[in-house]
Length: 104
Image (cartoon, rainbow, N blue to C red; front, side, top):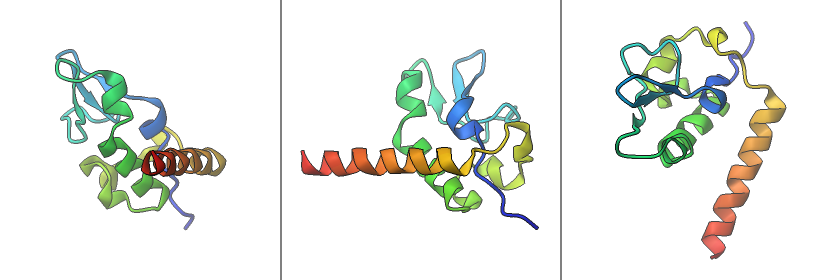
């Protein structure tokens, strides 16, 4: 069995419900992976915030139980796999930003 890749949805497809609730996945009709609401926070703040970054790192590391509650039961093929090179590029940039913030 091959390794499950990170889900591209965590990087590419925020889903906004009609009431402003934002989730990570087009299959999340019950908002199990809800990350917030647009009435209280911008999409940019939600999508690039601490929670999403923790979930992305968990996906890259193969710790799907440590990301959104829906992720352990998901058929990730719906959103597709994040290619390894894109995952590594995002992780490198994330670590560089964190290092710059610690220096400042």
